[in-house]
Structures are given as C-alpha cells and as structure tokens.
Amino acid sequence: MNKKRALFIGILGIALLCVGFSFWYTQRQANYTKTRELFAPIYEYSGRLTPEEQKRFSEFTHSIMNVELSVAKKYVLPKREMLQLEAHSMTLYRNNPELMFMSSDPPFPARTDVEPYRRYFSLLALIAKTELADLPTDSRKSIISHLDTLGKRLTKNSVEVYIQEIRDMPSRPRQKLPTMRFGVASAPGEDAKRGVIQITDMYENVYEVDLDASTDTEMTEDTTELYAEIDRIFETLTDAEFQRLSDLNKADRSAEIEKLFLFP
Image (tube, rainbow, N blue to C red; front, side, top):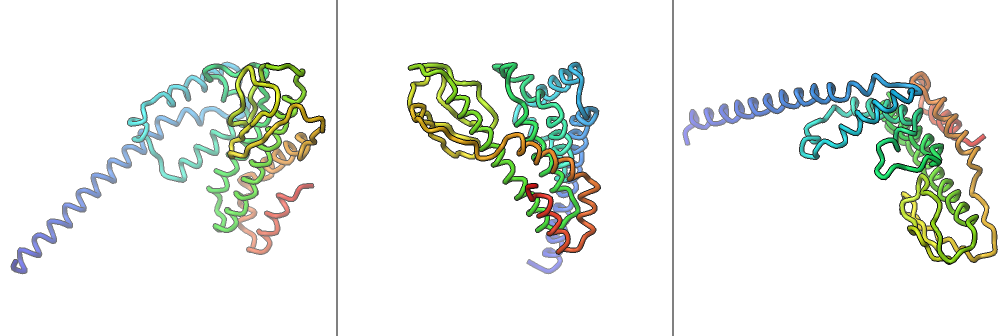
C-alpha cells in the first residue's frame, strides 16, 4: 500500500468517525430535549399539594411508568439534571407521601402509616442534593454515608414497630397479620401459624419473632426522636448550607459535617 493510499484511508476513517460522532451527539441532544419536555410538568408541583393536585400528579406519573421499557430507555438526561429531578421529586413525595399509594394495585389501606415514608423520601432527596453539591468527594461521601446509616436506622425502627404490632395481636392459632409497614420486604401472609414468624427487611436482614416467648422486647430507639432527627437534618441541609460547607476549609468542613449528624 503506497503512502497516498494509506493517507487517504486514514483521512476517510477520521471523517467517518467525525460523522458518526456528530450523528450520535445530535441524537443524544434530541433525546435530552424530548426528556426535558416529558418531565417538565413535574416541576410545576411543589410543597403540600391539594387533593386535586395530588390526583393530577399521580395520573401523570402513572402514565410515565406505564411506558414500555424499550421506549423508556430513549428518555435520558445528563447526570446533573437527573439528580435535580430526583431531588425535586423526592422532596415532593416527602411533602406528600400519600402520592406513593394513590396508584397502587391493590390500593394500600387508608390506615397505612405514611410517616416513615416521609422520612425515607427526605433522605433520598438529601442524597441527591449532596451529589449535586459543590463539595470535595470525601465530604460528599461522608454525608451520604451518614444518610445511609439513618436509612438503616429508620428501617430497623419501622420493622420493630411492625414486630410489636404482631406481638400485640390476640393469641389465636391462625390470623391475619397487621398491614405491611415501611421497610418490611416480606412476612408471612394471611392465616400465619402461631409460633415463630420470620420477617425480612429491605436490607435482607432477617428477624425471627417468637410469639410464644414470654419476654418483652424493647425498641432499639424512640421513633419520635428518630423522626425529629431526620427532620432536623432535612431542614438544615438547604442549598445555602451546602454552599456554606463548600466555603469552609477541609478540617472545619469535616467537623461541621460530624456535628450535624451528632445526635443531640
């Protein structure tokens, strides 16, 4: 192969690569535009919604979730925009936890305790906001680690409340267990036999409940205090607070983060 032919093939290859990249980039930008248009209505909702607003929002999100997977894959956003959407959505669910159950099939019972879900969505919103924050990687990891730990504590607390509800049931050979709670991944269905019941949480931790044991079990931590702690952190970690943390030097920032998650 002479030099001219080799040069021509090289130039042609580069040209084809540039055309391919240009097509891919144009297609990706077009997909971004479509996705922004699709999710734009979500930003029209914020704060505590009225029943009518909750209904409209639920119908909108339900229609999105019913899109076929092959079609859904085309709707993508840059990472930061996805995090912004997640932070806004989780905050919306935090303020309106009932939204999670409005399109459930079968529907959740009206007596479902939404309070642990409210704190769970608080933590998810904060994790997304932390990912967006202009902080060093080690600081972001530290905050997210603390938030993950709170999530595990919240799950354990909720499961323990569920176990106590089971223990408080009348002593019968077979009976229907209480309504499932946040954090409970699996538990025996209806007509559970009296005896030892196994419960698995969302982290795959297994709890064995001996209904015939005479010893009383205590909660690991007070539910009201745990909820208050999560609420305090959610209300403290505002955009302004993230900015303040970013302006501190490494030592001061680390100390402030640890102080924030120190239980009063």
